[in-house]
Image (cartoon, rainbow, N blue to C red; front, side):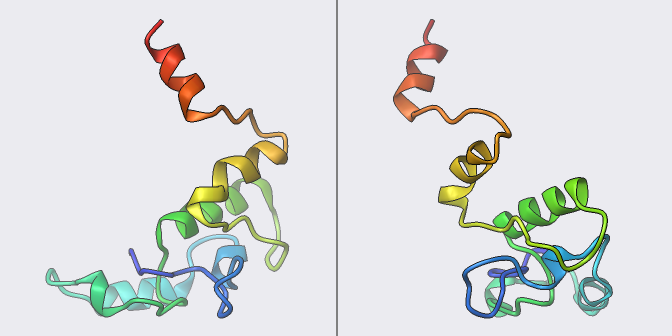
Length: 106
């Protein structure tokens, strides 16, 4: 379930506990079960343990792909830094916007 700020640590600097856990957090499931069709993420901002935001979801998914135990260093980073962070880890290459734009017009 989308929660603004979800899966970040309390300092808002890195992955929180749930983002460094294998599988779905039971707390996420409990929180989602309590919601209705009228759920509005604007009312749950920074309830960091209750769900995931966009970059939190990507970080959690990467963690669950590469890690096999809970509590290791996480992969949640600000969305504006995510591509560079992943490229720096050797998971592909980062191209500037202008390079991609020129390439797409080939």
